[in-house]
Length: 206
Image 1 (cartoon, rainbow, N blue to C red):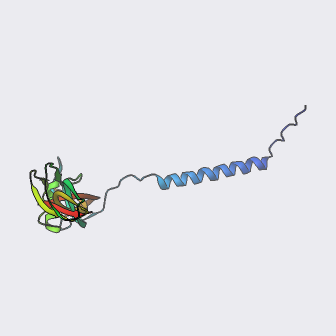
Image 2: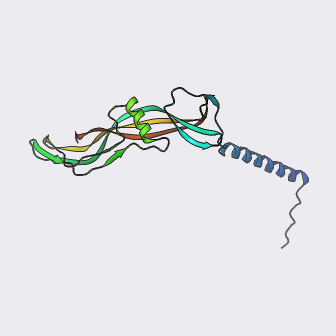
Image 3: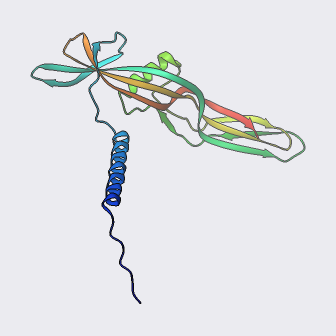
């Protein structure tokens, strides 16, 4: 059986294929330029904001000190009960019954942050959200409560502390020595759960 030879590509076909490849490569290069993250750049030099809340020495060299300032801004705060222990009492009888439960598990809740200091953030939370917020709280054990369980129902008893789910951000600013001008150094949004010193039982039916 004889096989015919494949016709040679014409110059026009090869040129068309080359043009298509160049266009495809150019498009891919453009997309890569859009997707690839840009290198971090220094912020603008502006007069230092007057409401920067905390300054500390960031670095020191022969020209003097560089100070870093933090400015916290609270975006939202939602109350939340932070349970450390829980009980459920079910009453299958046709009349109410009394029940007593005791917490025997402890848990520690605390304010943590990866930017700035936890003590700084806690201070801003007490000023802007609630004076009851504390940086760290461990729940007690051995605390009891009594309640009535209605007929054919279940009462859930949770022990813990009241707290807040908080959304906030931190701005960082740098300045040299005692200069009145600052450089913007970063914007860091975050969320945390903050406990309060208010502790006790929370009852609900199911």
